[in-house]
Length: 258
Ligand code: SAH
Image (cartoon, rainbow, N blue to C red; front, top):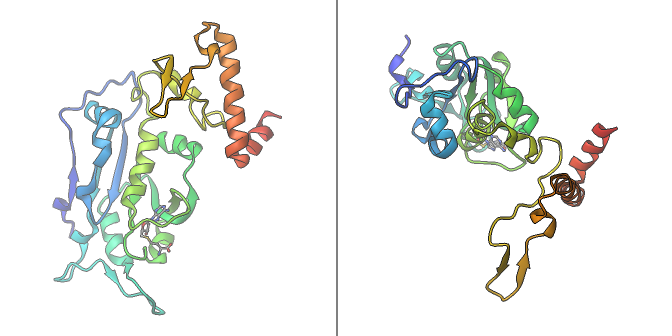
């Protein structure tokens, strides 16, 4: 039995869909035990405006609605013993089957490949992605195998659930969608886009005294109006900061330049 009420499609106003801006809106399906957490921060600011404009859309579905026992059980104790609970393959599968097509199927997991700007760019080109948010100790391995899950991690630390991680993936993708940032050039200069960390930013006042009495001026070059020199300066700063903070990124960048 398919319980349709478990799936909520959020339509923020009437989407103003302008086909000249993009081919198909980016649609995200989210399997979560806590659907009320979405869209969270993505309902605000840039992503929120883009949601209202219909540049992206999402729906959540709760696997709990597909549990068939009276207690609506979605988890069970692990075979082999040990602490914690494991999300059940049979229940999750019913939820996923009811929400096909899944598009690219992602499971948020600390064991996954690390989310990078390149991966975000790749995902942002999809029409539909489905993200499974884990809770407890995670998900029965057989479910991940059966659905050929692409496991993605947001970093080498353990969160209490996949929801914040899913929102991180979504955020990184959404701001790349055509029309979301407004100024398409903004992307080119950003950290990671060209493999370097970003140069430092300054705004008015040109001279600022911090509470400890130290006065700091904006680097002269930035007020020179000499765009080529400013670009050179920014590139040098970006290289310096990358070498210093992220030797791994610097090594990768140097290899690509050759
Ligand atoms: N027992 C697991 C941790 C489970 S944490 C382990 O030790 O690896 C519960 C859920 O949070 C996971 O199923 C996953 O969906 C999510 N999660 C936790 N840390 C994450 C991370 N770094 N990246 C992506 N998802 C994460």
